[in-house]
Image (tube, rainbow, N blue to C red; front, side, top):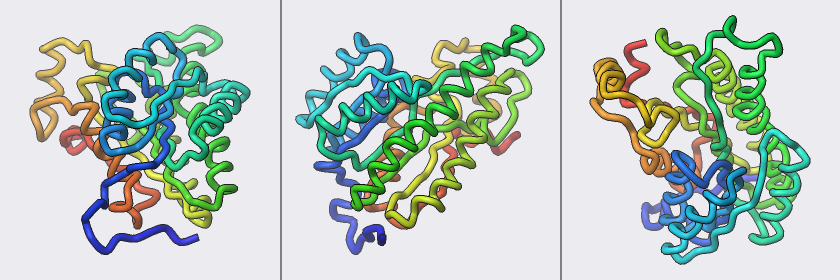
Length: 265
């Protein structure tokens, strides 16, 4: 199945009428993605665990005039994924775009973990297996619809580099695997007109390190080419590009946006 191409920039980034699922889209970086899609004309289905927080997110999205709903979902639980995705499809009719954003992190040395490696499994189950669960369930529906689609995985520059002063082995391993899974799926799903790409952010103001100290930020900015953190809306803007017709010939890409931090690693 051929993916559409553009001959003009008019409307190239317009997502009007497109239906999007954003996992973890009720807060932080995920809400930035949800908002970017809403402001670009897309309808948004937020899948998350905290439905109270989702209510506030939906209220803010509502100002854009589209359709926005939230569905309870634990991406690590396949039965829960099937239920939530089924509800989203029933409400929206079809899903054109999937943004796998839900994630957790940890800052723990491997040998400091308990004997069951609880932290390891908690992070990998969400950041990798959860992403695979969503891709499997939504991707099959995209394939069967014969309409193509877009899958965007929010990974991390930690999947490409090692931070010497952070102990992120579960997170880094999961994100590295998610990056390569992105490439694998791009090849597998291209036959069905489904494009699969990843965004690998660095230090984002609404990300896991949002409560960082000024001293820590000073260290980060010294290592970056740009002396600030990124914003959730900037991640959302890149996601909009990857979901739009403007990127119709882009698949299997892992796009790093970290202010140049990884250049010094």
